[in-house]
Amino acid sequence: MSCLKALNKFNVYIMTQTEALYHYTLRLGDNSLISGHRLSEWCSRGPILEEDLALTNMALDHIGRAQAFLKYAGELSEKKQTEDDLAYKRGERQFLNNLITELPNQDFAFTIARQLIISCFEFYLYTELCNSNDPIVAGISEKAVKEVKYHLAHATDWTCRLGDGTELSHQKMQKALNDIWMFTGELFEMDETDQVLLKAGIAADMTLIKPLWYNHLKQVTTEAGLKLPEDAYMQSGSRKGIHTEYLGHILSEMQYLQRAYPTAQW
Amino acid sequence: MVSPAHSKEELFQLLSEIPDPEIPVVSIREMGMLRDINILDDGYEVVITPTYTGCPAMSMIESDIKSTLQKHGISPVSVKLVYSPAWTTDWMSAEAKEKMRKYGIAPPMQSTCNKWSAVGKPVVISCPRCQSKHTHVISHFGSTACKALYFCESCKEPFEYFKCH
Image (cartoon, rainbow over all chains, first blue to last red):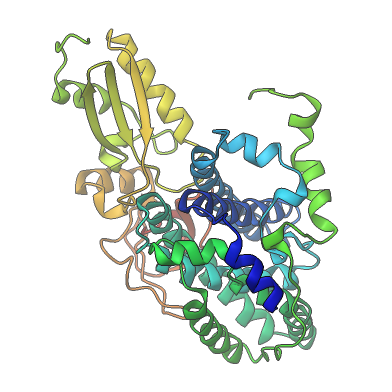
């Protein structure tokens, strides 16, 4: 540790605010993009028609938000990339989405558990980011928070119906929460990007969001007769571009057309 | 340099004719999506805001704006998409809401957006056909991002509700 500190002391390179903002908007954009892609996989596979529509509607909200953040990230990047360049031409090590977003959908209960955790997180994150000193981040967040309210209401409704439903639905919902919990720690990780932007009043302080998120989840799961798992080992890696084995498969499908027919246009 | 032959109000009038692609009885201006028009040194800039971030109608609206103005010899035209201030259903005029109701879509309630809670009671939505308050929500997500699906227990018809936003 002392060795590392010494290195930092003489390290002439400090991340600039623009670079930090590029990473930050890329992270927000990638989270939305991969969540949206997973939700879109429910298209024609929903348990009932209304759910098919609900999940794909939410996919659309996520992809729209991804487009907005990636467009901004592209403008901040050195190479002046477009949102499509960033979505379709990066490899998995360059993606900064949280691991929880890339996990396979599995059954409906697992998708709902993930939706509950992510929507609740996004609700507090974007509420906070509405006050960001960066007008574009604040503007997109203002828009996002309105949409996320509906996502959270949807996930809350289903968590209660499944948790407080039949013995089997309760079992599946509890198992989903238990299985996914180790991916929740990463949501609140902060690195140099966050530190640089926190000083500038641009980023959200995750240490403030975590208790709000936790208490909200506690309230919903209690209402649903479910137990929130205890914190144990937490998965990590996405801040450094290290992902689960699932992201590569998502990208191979999502990026296929641009890889096979570069510069193809709609 | 563009000839100042076209005033801002004139352009607003022309663009008021563009219907919302999803709800053709109301215009993009009545919907509150058309935010501003800037007359620049090198052309015209139309500022629009999406109802929802992923609204697929935006690219169609953009091309409608360009073709409408071009038809009247107004060019070059650029369309700028802004997110802030965020679009709200409160920007929709009372006339637009009434047109929407007649079209069969229950219009959004005014200023109810902030009264939302995690496990809250749903608001009562009147049926656009028979005005009955005996309705229930089937799904908060409907045929487009901006609409929810309801059912009227009085006239036994399903209907769409334009969500408060």
